Length: 185
Image 1 (spheres, rainbow, N blue to C red):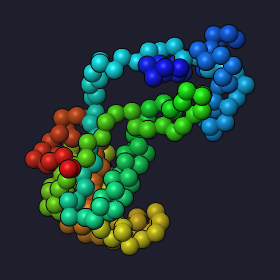
Image 2 (image 1 turned 90 degrees about the horizontal axis):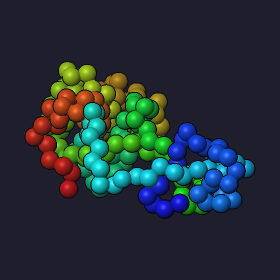
Image 3 (image 1 turned 180 degrees about the vertical axis):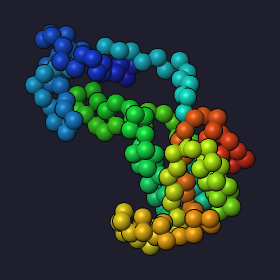
């Protein structure tokens, strides 16, 4: 398989002898190889721009330590993926036919903001009905999801101590929510 081809999900079990990588077994979702071959026949055109109707923005507070910024961005990305399972891409399959995990099928832009700008984006996102994934400072003191949800619920809903925010929704609505923010550098 060249890097210009991708698996065609409609043809995951083609007739014998039609596999682009002869003898390569078809992968299954666990990453193990199965007995049936997989067909790679859909070329990808890298020069064709894709315009999405939706947009994803991750907003991370600029004054955090680097490890905290990375942690917040990772958790926000998983929240967006969970909120939009239909936006998930297909599994990645390497040249040996091994299956790897899926990722969100569209770009995510990462913005930097201070606490006030995060709160403004949060208010705008809530008013526009966007999918909103919050991360508050108190979550750095917890060790699991139930504790994260408890400290979030205990916070002031009118003045959340946001350190990160994930947004997904209509392109224009997300653009309004992040208006004036700079991409994280």
